[in-house]
Amino acid sequence: MNHFQFVLSLFFALNGFAMSKRVPVDAITMSETGDVTSIVEGCGNQPFVGGTFCRVEEGAKTSAVISLIGPPAKCDRDECVFFKIFDTHGQLIYGQALPKGKTRLDVSWKDIIKRDTFEMADRGTWFIRTTVFWIDIEGHEHESNSTGDIVLKVFRQAYLPLNQVENDQNFVWQWVDNNHIYKMTSSLRAFTKKVESCGLN
Image 1 (spheres, helix red, strand yellow):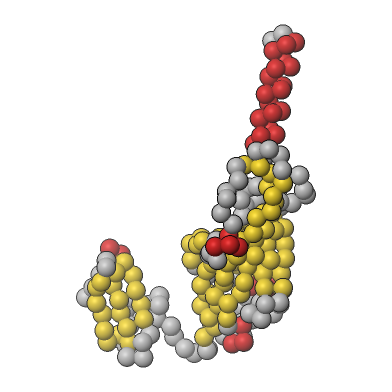
Image 2 (cartoon, one colour; image 1 turned 135 degrees about the vertical axis):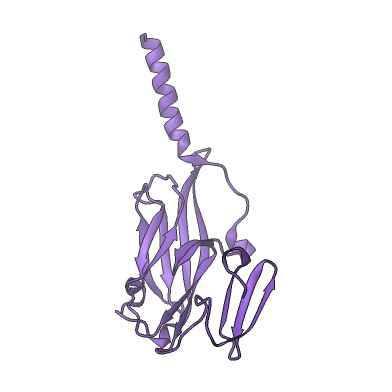
């Protein structure tokens, strides 16, 4: 490789590196649409756009983890992605940056609730805010924000929820609709699952 070819290849390499940090502008702003698009995973649920739903027993340990998902954004700051969690009263109770090169931040409920066990008072909707700094194709920095919800339901000790119990003697109704099986007790404890993975007796 001669000197000219070396300089040319170096130019394209550096230019490609610079451009890899830059992305096109999406004209839609989440704050204007009212949509919730933060990605959350936890409580046995798959990653979900907009939030997740958690059911826990009163007195259960708060060691379980919620995962906040962010993009592999590039920017000229030390960190490009930030998460904040607000409690059921709207107070900021947790904030953390996503390390560069990572797309997932694991947060234990203990970090959120500040206690070792769940209490009935923890029931409610916890609010998430995701902030991403990124660079457009012209080299200008932008800030984008999205929101999401963690709906937390705490049930009393000694209560047996049936949402994960396929066969229970208390079920009095069962039926199939839209490729799902449904079972329900007279007090309306319920179970549902796809027909393919659950037989109807």
